[in-house]
Length: 210
Image (tube, rainbow, N blue to C red):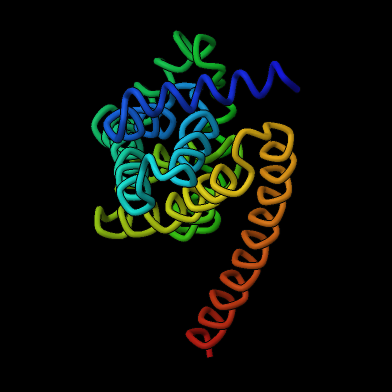
């Protein structure tokens, strides 16, 4: 535990030294295709908020802005390079970032089945969160909708991480266990949203047919 506390304190000091720009860059990297967890960035920022060394609103804004920046990188890669070119990149370099072609296919199939709302719920699903912008780019999703749904999903996730850091501070075990709980809650909510969305779409389809 002392080792874990030391790591948390190191990350807190690191975030404190790099400031808000570091939060933006960290979240931008996390939201793109690099394996850089947001759990490394926002909980330490939450600790600094509790100590009065940072303010909540700027942390939330730059964290969300970073998430949008990273998501836009993936979106434009998919939009301009296309499915085949992105797949070639993943096949060639994906192992460096723990990515496989199946991950992209799974994300794209999920997107095609459930439409634009997937951009929102996908931001709350581990393993899909960073990749959901790619099928949005492949489908040439309208930019205003992409930014709206991405902001909603990324904003909720950012609030959870900041809250955990603010409440549990340097207790790494508490942060991890509560993050697991909040992830399960998020997945449960995602499931409800998807079910409601599918029911609404079926009713609309039935009304059109009648």
